[in-house]
Image 1 (cartoon, rainbow, N blue to C red):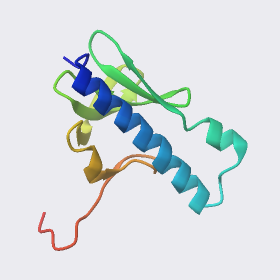
Image 2: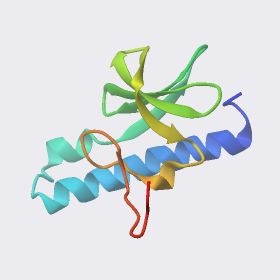
Image 3: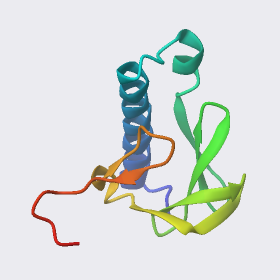
Length: 110
């Protein structure tokens, strides 16, 4: 269950990572105006079926009870075709772009 203390810390870490990497992304591209920066604040909401990750006022990711992170088709509708790892593998992705992208490690044969 995602309400456990350890998972709450991971959810907050994910939200902080998305916010910080989004700020970095906007700054590098000289898009860091006040309106854009106000809309990258990332929060989570634990609901019955999924945990919702919202960026600004928009839904972006859903997390199931196993900690698997998915994109969304519509708010509250999971898109199983867009899988972004788990709460244990958030460091393997760059979260600042429009969607999360897996970080390719050098000398990796994946």
